[in-house]
Image (tube, rainbow, N blue to C red):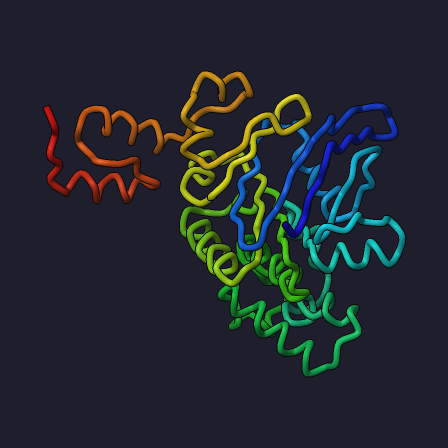
Length: 277
């Protein structure tokens, strides 16, 4: 286990409770989707997990060791757990892409050659090597998103937390980004995305966690979590459209297993299916 939050409680200074007895774990290479209505506590949990906020009570463990919220403890936590906010403009500030992505590694006290290697590695991982010399103000929204992620990735975190990473992207941009994130998990980086896109959670995640009542009320593999539409509605969520479509086709005997995407639905409908009975 890389990261483990146990029975976390957090209340903002104004008295608003944001987390109530929330527990959450992250293991190497995991692909996790965090779901919940606005205000459910997803963003607050992310800020707890990377040390931006200190829990009121409960424990946060990094590699099995309790996190201390002093300078040394927070430095270790933030090197291991990177957070990318929803709006990339909250994180981009340097003149060029290369300068922006190099900021984190430079502050880690690395040699110049190591910094250049990390920047090149991060840009290549996100498929934006050709943008290295581009002014950040000249980037499209989707490009700025990928640069913001690359800036965190250059610090080689064990866990990458992404708040609504696909918001504002067109379908092609979403596909490109999620493929890049999948490649990162194959290399061992754990990725947790907070999203309202139920179909994205169904198609991409290996584990889904659902927030309700400012805590995680339900979690498991997508097939288990999305199996009870009425329960999801009680949490203010709807089942993924592709899941509902696939379930109807499966029950009609037109396909032999649940598809993960519309493209997979079309592919399976072209295959002959033997209906028993």
